[in-house]
Length: 158
Length: 205
Ligand SMILES: [Cu+2]
Image (cartoon, rainbow over all chains, first blue to last red; front, top):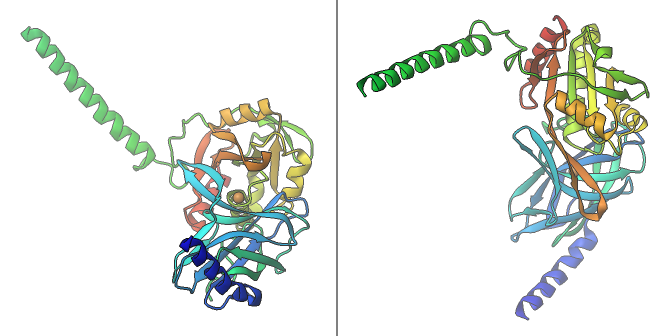
């Protein structure tokens, strides 16, 4: 019971933040930087989303979902290499970001999978993406489209 | 009794001598002075690469004979793969561009292990984002199994929630010389310079 109350209180505290979330920033919550994807053709069945998430809060948060008008749905996946074999699996619990820490989504590791892109994504373009966090709520960001098969965003040095 | 012990001892010495010789000969050929620098990362006699019969992304039926006479770089993957396959095909594209006209001397092949979804059309659309010299190959379940066997490639269909599936697959790029013999692999963790050196050596073989 007390736990539920606590949860409610937390939710109440987070709600206004979520409502004001913009430019990848929820005050005191989670920020996303280096948000990028790779160019794909119009018929590509999937695309990937990569970024760095930073938790500015004092409690752990979790990326639990995402949406973009550029794809039918978005899933959170992990990719692993076992003995030269590539295996990709969904992460049903999302991505945990401990307080004060960052989580990096990048090639060869954890990624967002954009399932069924609704159109071609061209290099240099920006694609809106809404991230959903357990506590920070919705955070709106933009994916910068890099070259097909790029290993990092072109402004990685910044 | 004594004779028996002596026999075992001589046997052991002979075996040890043979092993020492075998290991050092192996070293000479693979890492030592007799190795083929740059290209061969594993003994060239490995039975990787062999017969296959598939359909290319333009809908043409092909076999390994259509790619004979020129070296080849072969990668197995699938188009519903958002991460490692685009990374590898992106690396291939960068290598092809860096090689310039030399790249024409190599066959660049992407073989799909997803026999159900990767039709020639699906492959053609997927490959649009990469260098046009990369040829996509697909086939029936049996044809894909044969090609994978020829290259000692592991793959497995893994069901996902919601009725879909994903594919586990070996992620190496295999290099074959002009005679179709195994000539090493490209490793995703090595630098682009090393990979470029390997394919440059391959183009000259
Ligand atoms: Cu994925």
